[in-house]
Image (cartoon, rainbow, N blue to C red; front, side, top):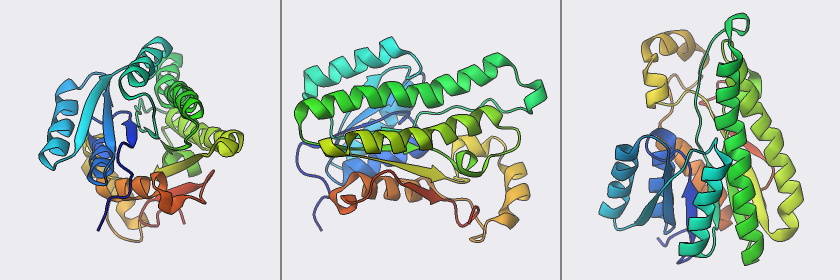
Length: 251
């Protein structure tokens, strides 16, 4: 079975040093894409992602940038343009949490989450569409939201707000750039077995497993499969949509 992506396809995955981002990067590379692994702090994790891809015969490079910093994002895209000339796929995966109930949530906690999750998505998408429009070859943008952005989640006013905004943002991008051959979609994972959920894994599973019809948390690879599909030509008539990957939790 052949690769989903044409030779020379370039994909950028933000926050690809672990978790869902790593799984996405590995799956895109396994299907023929040249993957740019973005990270901010976890250099070792980014190198591990790269090593897995290379061991499987794929191609990957590492690009450091704090996506919440416009200047760092601009510098990253300048490097991408210089070395790769184009960008075909963008996966906005970077995200953080600073949970707490609203009355006790500091402005700094709210701001930090929105800056990384939403502003980071904005900065990277802006850079991507500029490259895609200049190349006149279209492209695919997949933004990682969350079920918290679809239905809200107690203790996550900042996170839910940022992830919900990403859904509306993506619909706008889909409308603005369809005429340029650029598609934009959202993947909204539910509870996935990553470091973020493992920190409070036992408590989360006790609280939510009964509400997940499939009776388990998802795996990063199950999210990655959907992202790869949306990035590929097999999803050529899908844009502006939100695909929820949650084992039935929010149905």
